[in-house]
Length: 177
Image (cartoon, rainbow, N blue to C red; front, top):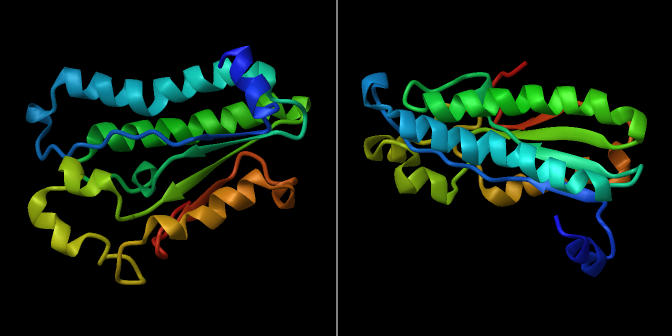
């Protein structure tokens, strides 16, 4: 993050990391090293780099919210690379939360479970699975992106001032740790 950006924004007090690459591959034999590496670069390495660039601009009282997924706990067989990055994000969040707590910076995560996003229809799910996407949740449907917003707002607000290293699951009732 350039000093000019922080200055033009009037400072930085909340950082939300929400980049994701998800491409379904049915068999590990078909999962290329290039796809594995690109998924890790997009989903976890970029998060690390953004946090490193922003950390000098985050004062005490700031918050970082990372996007993970139900896939971190219950990986789909066709999303090995994606699910692995989401588990890494959970650990990154917990470790970073502990590291930054003495500086007054809170770090948490939101773990969506099946949500209708462009990822799903652009190779994120096998085409034949799309009609059933999210129907295995206790609510019997996939969620909508707007149903995630309150979780991010809560974790970015002062109302969550005593919440640290937490992963808030917004997943239609799917059991998760």
